[in-house]
Amino acid sequence: MIPKLLILILVLSQVAVAAEPSVDSTDHDSEFSKAISAQGKWVWIPRDDTFCRDGSTTGIGVRLLPDAKAVMIYLQGGGACYDAQSCAQNKNAPIAGENFSQEKFETWVDTLGDQGVFNTTNPSNPVSRWNHVYIPYCTGDLHGGAKTNASVPGVTETQQFVGYRNLQNNLKVLAPFFRNAEDIALMGASAGGFGVLVNYPQVVEAFGGRSVAALVDSAPVIPESSIKTSCFERKVIRTFGLQLPSRCPQCADPSRGGLISIYNYLSQTYPQGRFAFASADADLAGVVLYNQESQACGGAGVNIFNYRFSLYALRDRHIGRDWATYLPGGITHTMTQSDALFLDRKSRGVSAAEWLGKINDKSPSHIPKARLILQR
Image (cartoon, rainbow, N blue to C red; front, side):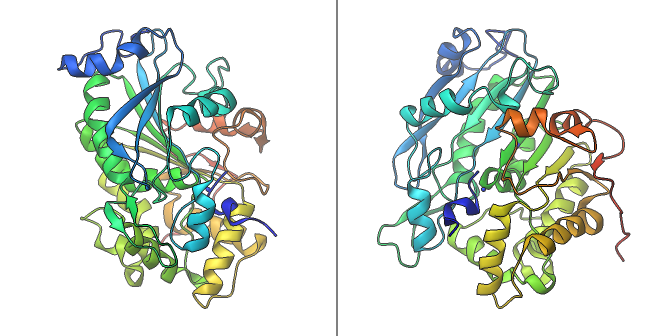
């Protein structure tokens, strides 16, 4: 039996842009001083205003590359905590969990810190020579919660679902430090990909309305149809206190469209932005998640065939006119932290890295080719 952990796990200058740190406060200089002197190596910065779901404090990882003029902020994935079973399994997620310390960060650096979008030597990686910021995931709330002392059915302990607030506090130091960045990207995989959807507006705001590129890796919101996942949407919105855009009331209301509305909301509200979505077309973790939650909602269930159809419907009917899409064949879950899946594997002769490198093109790039349908 496939463990539920797969639901969302593996569920966007030495002084960097900072060749002139360009900060307004020596407090920020002090926080980043170790990263500035680390010669392109990963550094853990503990923060006393960011918390995990067990109430412990956490931090961020930063790698400042020589002569880098842009910054990529990455939201880690790794499960979720919305019922007893998912909370128990998320608790022990290897690169997520209910807490995240420097020790966990160092384990991540040793295993994944130079893979995929973090590979600094492969020129096909479009962010290989950027500064990199790693946001760990220990809140179990898709990086979108703002609900303290929350209750989850079947779980004794109260939970601190504060992923949205964590990024809000991190941006208070990241945005001033990287204020002169020539480009900015927000990326995330699985739960982190959902976090990109939820947090994009506050990242743009923190950087003063700048153009921000977004990549959502393996975190689709699929159309309702016979699959029926609206009650799952309601559950996670309520459980996490999910911080959806206030100017998108339909995003929080499945009867008016629900979470799938957020794609168009972002591209229409931020026309200066650049948006990309990638997923294996039969992502087994996504199939397992949506099959379970569809059946719980009284739906027909999900298999690899209607999951693939749903991804194409998402592309062709909902987002493809504004979002670039990359939907290679396969059952793997997430690709941005893997050289093999992000840099080496090709679909229609194009790797995910090469596809992402075209995000600034005037027309969104679709692999495979989209069949866009005008919505009435």
